[in-house]
Image 1 (tube, rainbow, N blue to C red):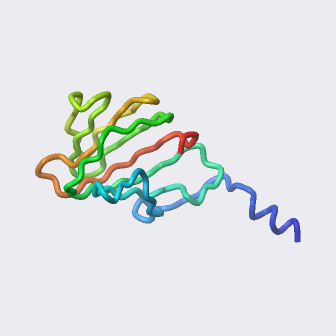
Image 2: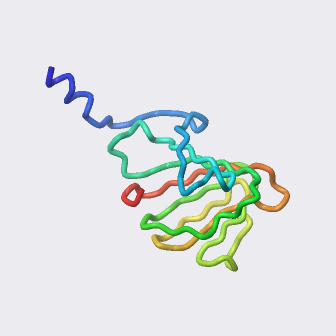
Length: 130
């Protein structure tokens, strides 16, 4: 019996999945801001990275700047967003294929670009702060 449980607790060497079948999670009151997060590696229990697919929808609420103890990689897959890093004066319009890599503790925020009704991106964080 103990062997059965110890095998279940062992972390797998890899997991596979699909970008459109992530596990929906709430982060930083994201739904209020028209943002949906989908964890893409939720089946890997010993992961050191936290990849998410993020969807942006129109919202009357604007999320302020956030920062965290993790480096972050961000890639726009679809649509257009405004990505601000450091402060709200340092913003760039990003479209499909554009990416950014952030250092730890850098304030940042993302919102749909004017005229865009939907955007999708991938972000990967170091798991240590989540």
